[in-house]
Length: 436
Length: 142
Image (cartoon, rainbow over all chains, first blue to last red; front, side, top):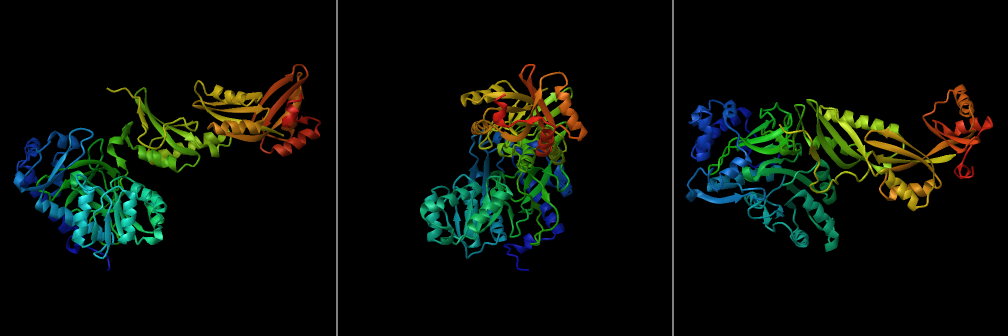
């Protein structure tokens, strides 16, 4: 087998051995967590005062969840599990929506993080012979430094250009014959559009791979980036609370993102009931750090939505795969007890050529029942003038939605241009149900 | 044959007069108008003095609009006038999909407008029975 791999002993570890390792590390993490005021109180509430109280991995479910609000409430050091003297770096969130969250790292914490990123880079087929241009922001944002140290460890030639200044990015790519870049998908699309203005063609570049992440994107966007540059693009998933990049990454087979399960315990839960979901069902990603001493986090609710990809990856790695992120659990709607994500509705509408891209989801109360109304605009160029085809269209969208979200909504068709536009942060959900 | 203009409008105040306002601005005369109501929206069907111009004007303003051939048949405005026409259709088992009528000269002339599956064949059949199938310009001479 010629699969590129950084750490075969861990990446191909048998599940049984991997789970034994997880239990050992989970107990260690609980021991670290018990050093923080926050978790000492939380764990006492569930009767857990000693790491050995965890008899098996199933006991993970006894642990309380941790939320972003908990992290904010613990600002600045309520979750710090070591003496400040032992910490060597911190990253904080921007704090634009409230108090910032802080993650501290010891030297071994950073070392482990770098190891995970190195695995990702090699899994995606990059090597020490590559020239790596890191186009994401350095500093508090974890994407820049995270990939930087991982790439150095692999032995790539790193160009730490950071984000922005597209003209400079393009000239660096040409002058140093960059072979691998790390950027957000939208920035790569922007960069491609700017090539002509700099008098550079794709043929003058030697680019062969891109690592894309930090924003949700569709498979179509990935394929578009691949086609525009004639490269392979690999999906990267991470979040600052879990160090940053290096949590999950696609291998060369591009069939979902391997999540490093020796470093993170993974659960997918129903964000409404908080119960774990069977494999394959879409829910909120919940993760527990297994190797971070300075800021251990137990059952952290990421608010990102995904599902586990079933079966084994052809690469042979035993670490399970996440499907690409579908959206945020904050967006989830509960309609007559059924969880509905706006992105599921959007998917159906995007596949219906007779309607445009603008839509509005409205929730109403009829007696004791919720009523879901999906408003969409007809696409002017495909309007036939026949009211019956409109009825058929409504019926067709209604059926497609029912098979996607298990509820048949009322579908309303509207004039082009009458609903909020699809770009930017348009308000797409209106909940008219009275609050109790 | 005539061209009928169909326009998709939201069922809320101010939308219908948005359509008629555009027609007025282009000096387009309305001969007949019906609305098929579908709760949240309606499809407005119009016979107008210049259907192509009206269509373009509405599409330019962002409306979903379409042109479609319809049969406009001149009949006598007297008891039994419409019945005689419909008897012809019934004999040949021709189904009427949508229809409306209006009087042009009271006691003398009315026009029956209808959508059928094969308008060309039906037009030939009706003409053979001595009834007049109108073209755009002919409607405005009545």
